[in-house]
Length: 275
Image 1: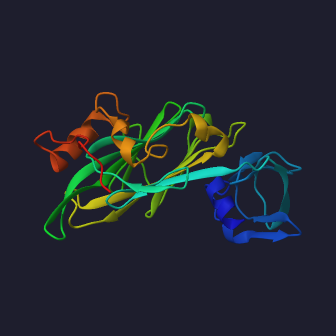
Image 2: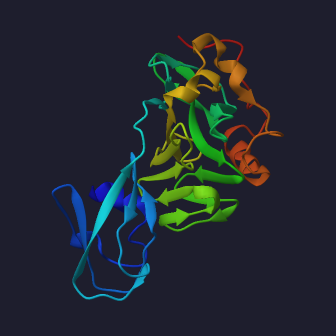
Image 3: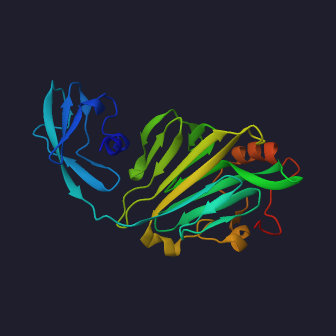
């Protein structure tokens, strides 16, 4: 409950989270400050509407109000992730490795109006000689007409660096930024909603000094028409290579990553895949 309420953005502008209690399946809030409370909000699986006898702008002192839940049908979700050097756990629950630098489509769905891409950087690993591999050093998500990018530990929304916190954008899109990850959640549609989570960690051997892992979640009903590495297999990963001219990364971000990763213009898919 607490995690759902936190990510719903209900408590923006007030410190009410610690005053939340759940009794017999209902949430009770003790509000002690003026808070702009939305009439309805989304948690991970449900839509909630507050039962308020007063308008949503309140100035209360230790008064309890309850939340009634209006359930949205629970739909099955499929999950995909990429991490390491690099590994992909596809929506079909198979795990494969692939080689390649430059920009790749990780997951794209026309119905969800969403696409996630990663920028891979070549990496030399001293193991039984020198092993050529790659790591993700940039991640970008387009949902609707909004683009969210993560390069290292900075998160940009439409090219502007954003501070930590929950950002409610147009069209029901939310971006939750913390020191650990950036979570992009698409608007609720009939099939459910999509989530992309991008995280970063320091890595001394990476040319950028960081690496990314990306997690994608889509309603399972949308998987059949989806594309990207999350749908590809080991032998077809190179088909997901994206030209920088049509990628969702900003040109300035691509230039920055290319300067660090492949200044000679070598960011390109390899001739073969790794086993």
